[in-house]
Length: 529
RNA sequence: GGUCCAUUCGUCUAUCGGUUAGGACGCCAGGUUUUCAUCCUGGAAAGAGGGGUUCGACUCCCCUAUGGACUACCA
Image (cartoon, rainbow, N blue to C red; front, side, top):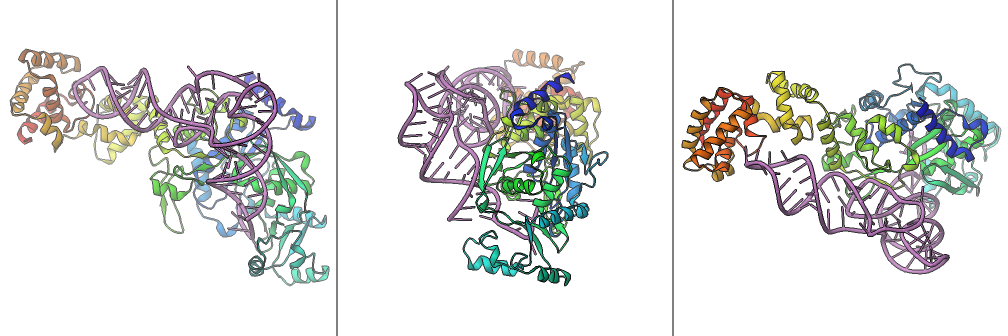
């Protein structure tokens, strides 16, 4: 506790110059605000992770808010998917959708906050900082076609159909008649807008390059993202907005909105995260890249309710959530040490926005596999045996738990995933039905059957079938007969396993037992050649 | 096209003016092993280009190049 306290003090001190005294003690409150338009992309997962790490590092709150202001793009099931994915990854929500108790600022779905926004839209309208526009999509398209680089702004709004060009009466009439309209922000041209970014420093924009963005649409009585986002962040007392770099171009609009709404003093701090890029070439990582290169880009499997299309997820691909978190945490952030393996708590302790890199990170799937391998080795044999058990049940294989734990201990280091364990250990459960042709050619000589027959007699006489005992006896026999060690052992392995792979031979036969070992040797002698 | 952001090994990155430019993944070689894998050891591998500033630039500034994001009544 004391430790945490001193950390957060340190953090606040570093920003002291940017804060007024009262402002300095503001509690850290961050939000992850996805739109429920489908499965949560892995880049979004990383954004959620960084928000979470930052919040927990500073003893703050992590909120989940659903930005469903686009009724047309709503996809059923997406919200549940997001909640389930975060839960699986261990990204705990303190407040909002999916939290144990929703929280003081409910509701947390923007569609349910409809009534709230209108007030602020009106405030802007009354202050002359926004206006009503009636231009239809077709008219806008026509303008875009006619005027190169058309932008709805100070230079063009006088040409359009809006409350700036129409009389107040006519505007009221049109609205009363049920004509659809939007409310646009009225941006004053040629002003400098400075965005302070915690990762990139100060970024300056000229207001002339920002268009009069739609803030509100009468069609569904809902604000657009920009408006809803700013209003909600304000009302929910968000202290830091940590989001993807794709939002950087609209950050000045948000800064302006805080200003127009009179909230500059409590505007959150911004941090725009670098993008997750596709592994080959450039560009944002997309679902298509996953399909094309054969790796998941979603945390969980997802079936699109509209298209019926399914996408694979990390969970179902056999990843441990800890491995995914660890892997993702290092795509755009590093601790400054040479540590690679981090528990969630270690990430929380060490995370810092000023160690987030500025440039995009290409998604390296191979490294992801390595992380899972590491975590697999870190798990206890009992735990893995339990997971492996489920795979065996599907194959109708029943195995003694003690024996299974032993098998796991022998093969787990050779696997990246629990689901690879079967390929590494199937011979423990099922006798080989065929034998690797290359190995036969190389290791199964004319004299081999006779030697294997001798081996059967030898093993049959052994009382103690432990690895130590069998190894000693078999090696003595090989030495006494002056057989070639490699020749015997490889033929032995071929007979028992069917392939030139697997752990120590004597460990294998100890688990198989004398009877099964001898049976397999007999089968091999009969069938090979 | 416009605006903004970015640029160190193939990839993720360290370096916050002075280092033999470090680590990890992957790759290659060697070792361990009765096999395969693991593991261990070693190796190849980087400051986009050009100007400045400075005693000294990967590091600071400018230009160029390249890449990316954004540019909807989507988020």
